Image (cartoon, rainbow, N blue to C red):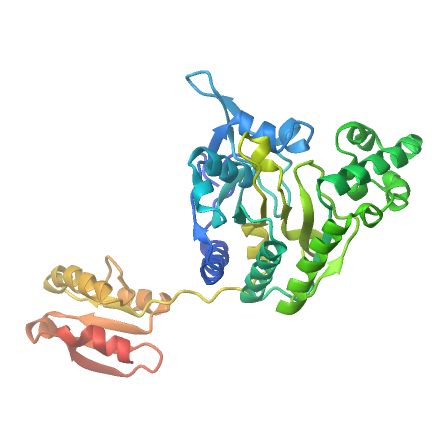
Length: 414
């Protein structure tokens, strides 16, 4: 490592195979979201801190421990985005996007959380994100889940991945369940961890998915949501699962899968795997019908999911190395002078090609070989005088002369 400045802890410099994996995930997401009619959007990397305090919630670890906030020169408190949904919903309100409702949107990019760096977790990390804003139909939930399933299929990571699904019910059902959970956990205060005791006041649903073994007996004996679902909530969930069954997407019910914040309603889901060590979510999301209203917008139903690009990248097959079509080997000053124009012409014709900047013929041919190019295009003074180049197949060793104005065609056809 050099003696100069080092990268900040929890950040990454991505190059080589890792960068190819990253790009393969993004490219697959772009292909699939187009098939489903999701439009690409961009939102700012930072927002007013209040956007995240009001939506992610002060009671959550994200706001209390993990957000990167700073005061700008004008004295305004700004926060680097820890997730996408809040910024997308802020844009939906401030840009007047309600007129385009329902909106199917997708984005990807960097997010920032001040958490302990570990395998597959970074302080600057990257996510894919897909949202449907303005639809209260269970078909929207099903479509997003089928989109996520198709993305995993395109990436070749379906083995060992399970879609876990739950419902939180509508606002009334959720409130009734929440009250029953509070009563259940209040009676068992002595069995709960410190974290869960703190959650009991603000976020009792989160006790259900506590990882602390002390909490498991109380959590496992807590009432399920099903006892509190009204008929509208039951019907909604049945229509989501019927949509998945119709599309051939396998799912399993997990009644302990929850979202702690009150604006989440109905569907909650995670595509989980144990292939990265401890069980973790690859794609997670749910319906958040109350969020846009929390931000000061009109009541607007919405559903979405996010997926970590780094985690998906670790699970895909090694992407094929991008190969050059041709490597140019100029011999002599006149050939070097002509090589720049020839490179530009070939690249404009869609031929991936490169050239070693210096060295004798042996060194340049070695560079052409190591580049993985299919052909070497050898250009010397004699060839230049005849307006030709020698085209050598680096696999078979076969070599032939080709007119300069037919080079692109010759490489493309071979």
